Length: 127
Image (tube, rainbow, N blue to C red; front, side):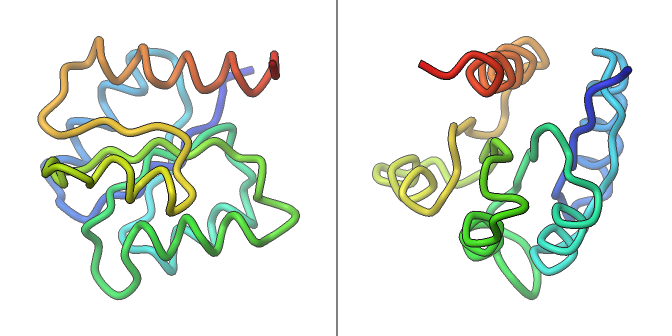
């Protein structure tokens, strides 16, 4: 059975590129276009992992991650921040805001695949 990834991204070109790449890697992908939708879809679909943009309309990715973390149903879902926020301190903000890992845009498909695999492995084999 394919692992399920919830992709939270509001730019159509990024959605298309990331969806194609994730599906090529063998994942089943669903897409949320903003933070509110991400919180709702995380609870209803219980994906194996969330790839979360931070700069989103309505509710940003950090607020969405925080809401996902407070829900007992969704709190253990790994969240990868995949964001254009790449200034000093941004990674720390993402990790403190509820994300488990951070990847600054632009990133390569290989970097994305490695980050996802590490998070999924860590989830299955907690230290």
